[in-house]
Length: 294
Ligand SMILES: Cc1cc2nc3c(=O)[nH]c(=O)nc-3n(C[C@H](O)[C@H](O)[C@H](O)COP(=O)(O)O)c2cc1C
Image (cartoon, rainbow, N blue to C red; front, side):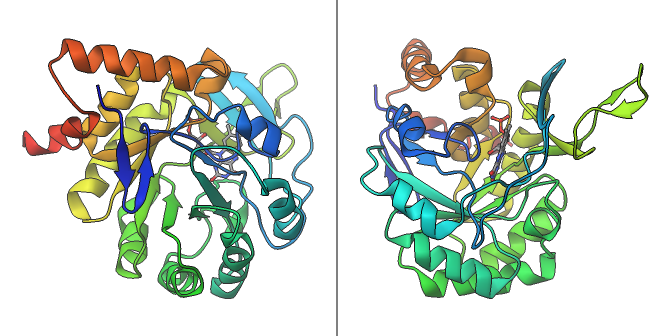
């Protein structure tokens, strides 16, 4: 049973990637996921950022709510951490305030990674995330494409996803990654106060899966570039749903909290069983099936 897939020029031994921001700050924690088809780094910017105070992550009924605030050591220090890393494919997640900053960070990380993921979707980091203006996306993607010779993916959130993806695709993005966490909050009714130190955060895990599947379906229908699905995946069935919606590969973040660090090898085993019992020879055969049925 073949689990190999590709996202444009990036070839993967299986369709599972570690999503940005979950146990991927250090080389050692990332190497725990060498059974994944690819590992996406923590998002990194030009300057060091401390991030927000605690509480920064809490568990809710159907998912996790976090507001980390893009903590990172700055790209120059982070590149040293990435040297010699042993994972299948390493994707460098980067953020910036404008085209020049994105291009600068991309150039600095290029030598250490196999592809770039431009994070334009963190829902609680102002213009470093989902607040990055839609009309500046094209310029930023073009600047990064001109600056590096490796594939450039653009990670978007669920809000205005089609409009933002159109800007990215037009400027030459090699793939769209969707979705990031969904802007959300939790209030403690005994104290009447918001629980997160940052007040507002991003919701991830099982609750957001239908939102992610919808975005992947619409994106893959509209654009000719590959789509990577992310949001709420905890099982092989979730992976299959995203791929039938049109995803060429998927990412898993919060799923590690629910199923542990073996989630990648466990899901690969479950995928093989599901595909075999349903008469498929390769996982690629199911990509976009839900769309083709229309
Ligand atoms: C604690 C935490 C930190 C995250 N940090 C980042 C980040 O630095 N960059 C990014 O693009 N996404 C970040 N994300 C979003 C995830 O990559 C992913 O898009 C989102 O959690 C939905 O997937 P999931 O339901 O599998 O977790 C973070 C998510 C969590 C839970």
